Image 1 (cartoon, one colour):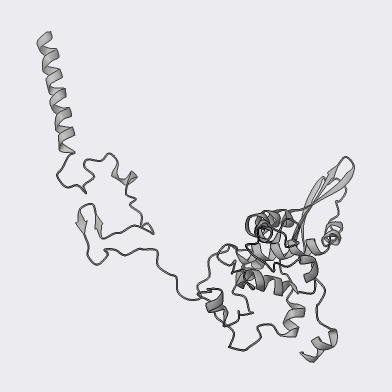
Image 2 (cartoon, one colour; image 1 turned 60 degrees about the horizontal axis):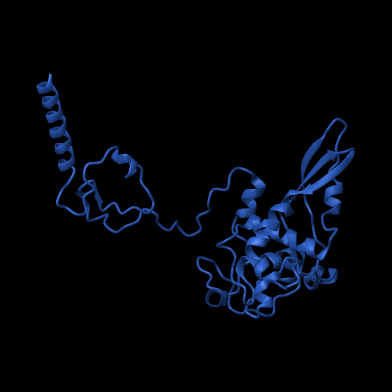
Length: 275
């Protein structure tokens, strides 16, 4: 009996030793024996993997090349099938100043001609915010309670990207301003003469000491911030939109997309002259 135990033990010890020593090689770059190697190296093509050497097979043509290549100029990311969202995400028709290439570090953009005003009077007046407000009406204790979902989401974006300079109230008294690190941050209440498009332009391309936020925010998010800025300027900005959402008999909650248009900021006769 003892002989059998010793024999079995010896065989197991030999097998374990073979496995252990077989997984060790002199090549310091070798991974040795691996269990389920696909868990370590995906069989699918990955964007930031050097495929110059795969499992011991070297391909000099692929060495030090990433598969995550720059997309062709003018390529548009996929934004779903909602026509309004897709239209909103298309390249903006108003181009940035040519000087912005050097002053604001814009890359991959088309620019207006040198000396050309990117905003014509008509564009200033009619460049409306295309993003509709998502309003929720809910019955609570016999009363209709409204929630502006678009502004709630915009507030999160404002806190993450804007509040450090513009302040929680949009008055230009953010921590960076109060510390003296920056100056000249405007009070939104004094900028209600700007069109929606001008506000979008400043956020998307940059303005003064503020750089472009295009890398951080997509167009839909920027348009939601334009709505949020309007709320700073007018506390009743979304009042009419909320009141337009009416609960029908038997409904406890309903959500509706409501378009909001700000008033033109240039005289009507100026608009007529540009038609």
